[in-house]
Image (cartoon, rainbow, N blue to C red; front, top):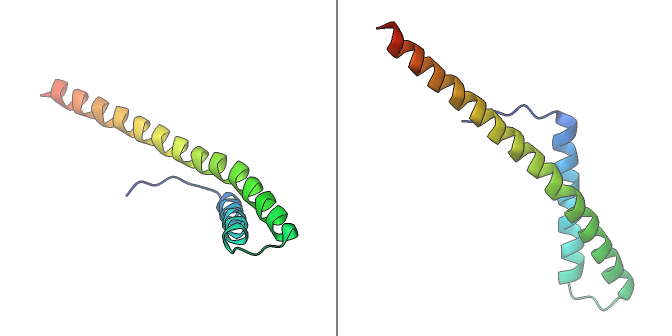
Length: 85
């Protein structure tokens, strides 16, 4: 399993923004005719969407960077092992 060290505070932030996104979507899908609920739903959806996806993209970017670094090390190890024989 891949391991990317993500600070606990960043994990909390991702969870909170994801919940914000979900609550906003829930308010919009619930079908209440209240314009206040719809405005709040759209606001929460936008805040959650704008903040959640960049945070998750950062984690994915770090994971890919780690994969590339580990891949380079394993290739270097394989090359050095073939030269030593």
